[in-house]
Amino acid sequence: MRPHRMELPRLIEIGEGNLAGFGRFVRRLGCGGRISLVSGPGARGRLGRRIEASLGALGIRARWHEAGENRPGPLRRLAGEVGRFRPSMVAGVGGGRPVDAAKLASHRLGIPFVSLPTAASHDGIASPFASVAGRRPHSMVATAPTGVFVDIRVIRGAPARLIASGCGDLVANMVAVRDWQLGHARGEYYGRYAADLAAMSARIIMENSRRFAGEGTDARVVVEALISAGVASCIAGSSRPCSGSEHLFSHALDRIAPGAGLHGEKCGIGSIMMSRLQGGDWRRVRRALRDVGAPTSAEQVGVSAADVVEAVVTAQSLRPGRHTILAEKRPGRRAAERLARETGVI
Ligand SMILES: [Zn+2]
Image 1 (spheres, rainbow, N blue to C red):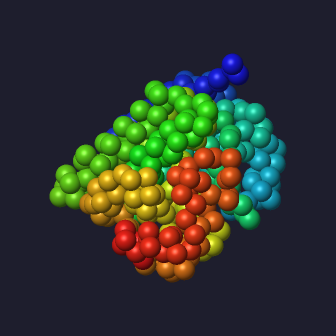
Image 2: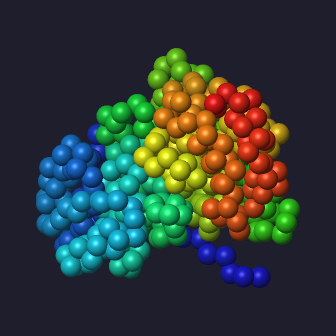
């Protein structure tokens, strides 16, 4: 048997208005005199001074680095820039991209990584995986975060669209786990604990969506589910429990219609169709997405019907080694179009 390695976050803090404690948090994780903070301009403008004050009070010097595009070239340059500062830790401050960029830079430099998400938009906040754009968009193995620090008040301040996208990334786990079971039937490693943990984080959204529709989405519930999903990936040692055919569909759209829709939005739409292909309760998936205010149609994310069909047909070819329902059904153009129409995606 091949050894199975699990790398897990060591410290997770979820609070309300606890941002001033970030310095103490990283100190507890062994941060020395310098820390690199990778962020986009929005997060730095909004939180920069408070984060600096919290670190400065403990004598920790911080340097900000702007996260560019998540393409190989800019990622290499970012790692070089961070390396020259010689920090003992790297923090990713922001939504999806800065957290992923910081994760990859820390992995390249071999120093610990802490994530400080400013939005609950995807499950990368606690997972060892990062999305890399390019000709073949994919997720890359990096290092699991040593620490995850969340201030729910900050998360609530993010646009509603982002948390709805996070719900889409979570609902996707339902489909991903089923795909993983299909892979297992062909001899692939399958970890029940990781699979159940990921499926549970999807169920939490499905079961609460009605309530969220009435009272607004509970940011804390979504954040905790996203962290559980990230930890499920850590336990699985792969992105399998959180990324199946619906993620391949989303990655295919990234390539076909770059810049349209958020990651979790596209995964949500993919989940509706792939759930139907799997013979699952796709209407329930669609209802949950509607309840939380996530898009359920191509039009809502600004892609055409032809783009959706193309994405369904080509998705599996982005990762032939990952067995999913798409590898079993192999929908051609006609079948893909029928699927998208029947589920109301186009
Ligand atoms: Zn995802």
